[in-house]
Image (cartoon, rainbow, N blue to C red; front, side):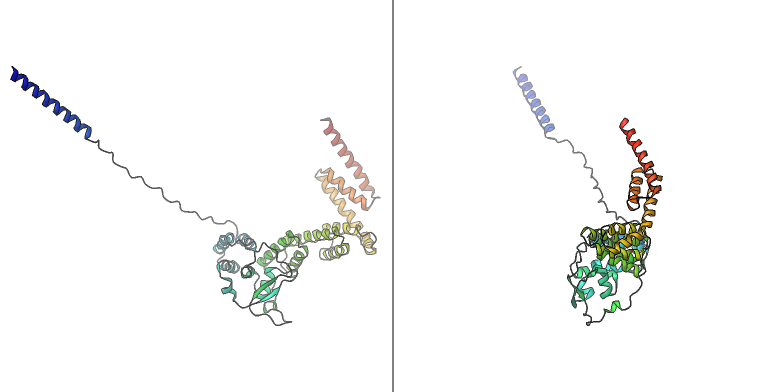
Length: 347
């Protein structure tokens, strides 16, 4: 029995050892790792080029404006699109070349100093010495000029090439050509910039040149009137009544019968009550001014703008206190305004 017990005991020990070994083996065995699924990388987005929209004329004007403010990067796509629409657009091609060109290589190292004159702009100087208004940008880069800065009279800039002999015009100015629409738009843009800078005389000079060169349009003509009136106001505000008188007389010669100019002229002449010529001019303008203010009253009344209508009648009666129709209309308009005010108070 003892031998059997010993055998059974050994058998039990062996079984335990096998069981422990089996369990150990199970513990040591690692479960199979799942297969790694490769993640596809997202494609790098390709930048989309924004194509400027508009006609060739509009885009060219915007490109020139950008260059006048020294922004070549903004001008580049605008001018490139102009050439897509009009492959033969020489001015657009020229300006594109000027954005990247080396100024000294393009214009040459030989140069001479030039003193900027009253009324000069870069496009005028480029036309005079380089034969092309649209070389204003390369000329600006040649002189390290930021175009948003003023080109003040008296400033010294460098002009490429040989200095013309004393008393002789630059070759580019000998045969002046009529202004093209592109040139007129360029000059108008310059005139607006001069106006915004408060340089009214220079702005008028540029605009009058557009007129004399046959490149004027409705926009430039209307803007010239605006500058005439603004400059006259500046002169009268500073007490230069005679200069304002001369300016507006010149303007009325160019625009006879213009309502805006007549009103500005009459206002200026009133500030010169002791001036004999002013009195005569006021007397001559009186019927025209009365008619203008009555038209203003009629337009305002049709719009039912009774406050403006009353204001126009007051100005008319200031010139002609005995105008019976104006006095009658004034009483009527005043009654309407009083009723409106009373109605608002009751509300």
